Length: 381
Ligand code: GLA
Image (cartoon, rainbow, N blue to C red):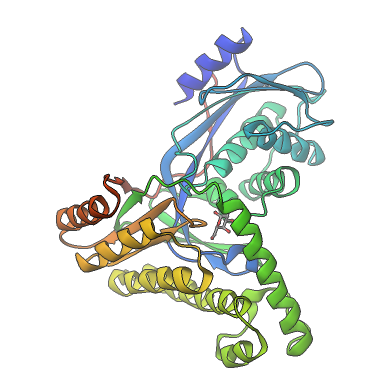
């Protein structure tokens, strides 16, 4: 992949790049909508990656080009951020500048190539911000560790682009490890690598989730409302919704009204499922882990209302065909589902395809997921 990005850089800017890095997309095994509530998540980095190659530009200028097409972005990143993908790159430069990790003068050229599908819930945006942050930090000779890179990328998206995401996507893109899932506690940022070698399928429903940003922001507001209410009525020291003790669920249910009650019940339940799931996975108990995946999907569908008919069709068909587990992954409202496969993979794949074709008249894209490496430097020439 670096070759294509290097060639694009050279063609666009007429010089060779000076540094390069790549970062992966991700799927989340379990722990949905828990990150911004201070709970745990359990994502893996996928094989699809974004590569960013970089070089110096005129002082204060960002020039960026992407293989996805469109004009070259050219802007003074301190004064303005453009609409679209350039805003993510500009946000990264602003955060690197704050971290004193930009080359002198702050002028940067970037060329980006990617095979992470956009709009499928696989976190193409974190692959972009993390790869760019890593490449530019390399260019500046700044020694930022994986957590710092994740922090730069997270703040770029949250504070500059204005997506109210949690820390999961940038953290797994920065810290992912081949053959492992990452248990990340989003309040403490404590991490644990957990071996993951099971057969996992990704079913991309091909429904885009452009609407998801609005819905995600709406859910965040609802979760904040739940915390505020619970603080006033029951627990003044509550900071994160995910810290609500599971054994106090009846009190929570009495204190809140729907839809906020359902959102909160999902978050508290999903938090317990994710921690338990991580234990099961580290003990190799895939069947029990798969059962938690189904529960998680059901909770997303019924309580958090972030599923979509296409995702439900896939999960339902997978379950009937004997898959160990299946659920939506990422924000939801379309995008992709994951299926944990034990025996009878072909039968499961056929059943999913058949059910999907029957409902929507087309086949979903089904591929293997391999737990892959997080961000890494690449050769720039
Ligand atoms: C999106 C966000 C993540 C996370 C998931 C839901 O992908 O970017 O931070 O909140 O939704 O789990």
